[in-house]
Amino acid sequence: MSGPDLSVRLLGRLDWTEGLPGRSMPAGPDPGAGGLIVAGFTPPARPHLRLSSSAAGVVGVLTGPGTDGRAVVRFLPSGAEPIRTPEPVLAAVGRTDGVWVLTADSLDVVGSAGTIEATERIGADRLVGTLSASDAAWALEPDAASFVTGKVVHDRFAAPRWHPSGAAASGDSLVGLDLDQPDRLIALDPDGSRHEGPATFRTEPLERLLAYDGPVALLNVLTRLRRAGHTAGDALEIAGCGSSEEGVYVAVRAAGEAWLITSLAAPEPLVLAPGEHVLAAVGGRALVSSRTAARWITTGDRPETVGEPIPLNADSYASEVEPHAWQMPSGFAVQASSPSDILLSASGPTGVVALSVAWPLR
Image (tube, rainbow, N blue to C red; front, side, top):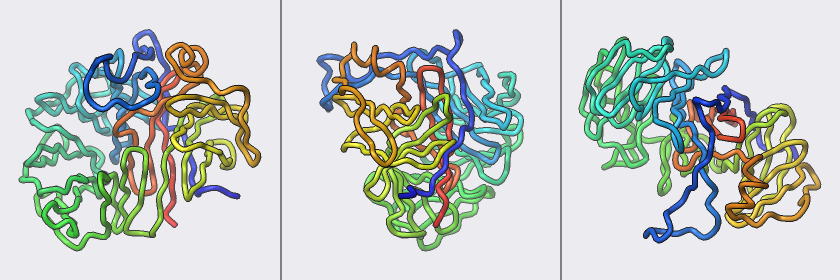
């Protein structure tokens, strides 16, 4: 068995420091709270990164327990560059000279030193980086889209009625399915012009459009990924990712099999029970967990459980699991810069990492 055609590399690492605490906090509903209760143990949450991509590179906003929404990270060829912003950040996108920062009532250009170099009052709720122009972005409102360039020079246009799967960057344009005719694709160009044509893909329930490149769309529901418009059955599920002294890794399910892909070795088969995901991978072993128990297993052609399973509760998790565990953020854990380049992040005992997973088109 050769495994799926995937490779993983480290974009950057940010270590926990006194000013960047990595402590975890209890997660899940408060006792007695209403709503849907899922059986099993909910592990405490660590701070995590919300990633974005643009022609200027990958950027992350640190959010979660113990954070104040003002820590932004640029992932440069030289490594991770933290930027401390003056105000809490809703979203950020890279520029060659810093970052675009969306706050509650404005869009700012923030330099690498953390100073605001330009600002404009824009009531947007989403920021999308362009993939051709290095210093441009789209600021999206429910009924409008502003194309911003330079020092926040912007043109505001009425937004198309996007399908619930949303819109993604394609070059410097925005593309998405039409709400009223989901078999039609709409492109909004930087000058406000629109182009429509037959859609090259169809969405399944709850899928979100992550990336679009010509005929190929990358869609996701949480950690499940599917490519459409290129080849049938092109799908995988991210079952965990993280880092160790031996490099970075991603675990996936594809075509009914599970695999561990590392940055330093060939893919290795994994045996994962339904609902299990990978929390750590080191020295030919992987720490896998469901919502009720964790266990160490060996990787390779003859996988087996090492030691006794660990029933999960607050004490056992803190002493036996958390010191090794790398967590992916909940919700929008997966991003992409193209249908063949997946962006992931994970928070672990020593810090937070951003990873790029190459998934070549066949």
